[in-house]
Amino acid sequence: MMTRRTTDSRNCFEIVSIEDLVPKDHLVRKVDKALDFDFIYPLVESMYSSQGRPSIDPVILFKMVFIQYLFGIRSMRQTIKEIETNMAYRWFLGLEISEKVPHFSTFGKNYVRRFKDTDVFYQIFFTILNEAYAKGFIDDEVIFIDSTHIKANANKHTGKRIEVEQEAKVYQKKLEKEINEVRVAAGKKPFDFPEKQERILKNISTTDSESGYFVKGEKERQFAYSAHIACDEHGFILGVQVTPGNVHDSQILPPLIEKLKKLPFYHPYGIAADAGYKTPTIAKYLDEEGLRPILPYTRPKGKKGKLRKTDFVYDEYYDQYLCPTDKTLYAGTLNREGYRNYLSDKKKCAICPMLEKCTESQGHQKIIQRHLWQSYLDKAEELRYTTYNKIQYAKRKETVERVFADAKEKHGLRWTKLRGVIKNQHYVMLVFAMLNLKKLATWMW
Image (tube, rainbow, N blue to C red):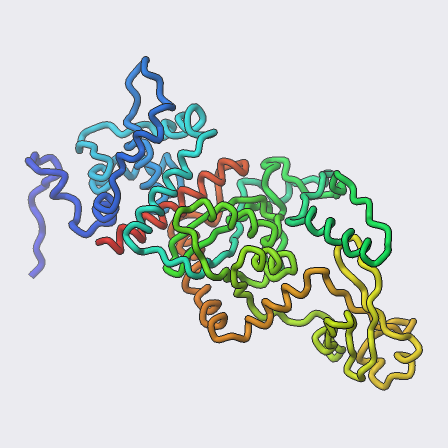
């Protein structure tokens, strides 16, 4: 039998507690129980004057931002609208049912006047992470590192070509020093490396000049930022670094690890990263840090049907390569980039039956390049075949890749409304702090 409601209860009065209106297993209850947010007061106390008008409670101020990033609300304006009608959000903030919610511009003004040039966002991130460690949830035997791009608040068609100074590569000074040491030992004159970097043309956005023009395979070309993160086996984010979208992944791994060293519980055994980090420089850095490289297989470069570099055997003792027909490629001089050419004998190559498969050079000469630090990469390649590396590398899809998937699908990290590296660093750090808080609260519950 169909029943029709005959009473309108919209104007009825009831005596009710806001505590009764929030479900017992709601996420805000889990978060509230997991962490005492009073830790925010000493972080921001020095940023407030002892005189003047009373301010909005800083814990409420930050909790509004936490709500936005915990639930993936697209803006602070929309977050305030949600808080006005959502009893769970009001309960989390400690507001009464009829109490007025702060204006949406309040946090923006406080950010500019108080928080922009401080480390308060890192301290919030670290406090949540430290709480997870105290509960025994962090397992950093292997640290998983990767990056994802975030679409910038800039039209991809509004860029212009500008000459800028090229960024110095990681370990550049160390490489230059070793190159000259090798040349001097060989009786050659050392290179005179310039102090300043070369100037190159780059596509710079006229809207957000600090973003970078992101170009990667078949993905859409656009102005973007890159979020580089390190996480543990359970998906807890240990460190975050935001850069323009055109900075190569391998450039950020060393500074990101240097940040991780500041954590009191930093003691990893290995670093797992994708093919973008598989370079001689990274392999050398990890070796010097005593970290086991856990890197993937990469396809040999070159034309199909032709001999690859892997078909040639390197003789470390004599510093030479041997081709499949046992002919020798002798070492040449070291160039400014740290590469040495290994050259074959033209006369022997001219009558070789494998010439067509080996080289298309009109001079009938095969040339192989080898980096000064290639031996470190070779060592990492040998470790790739071990059972340990295979098991650990397979965990990337369950750890760092899942973190990015959750951040983009549920927490709004696909694009940013903010402009500038510093603002986006704070934004991304808070998003990942909330991911940590969400996991911490759920596990504790």
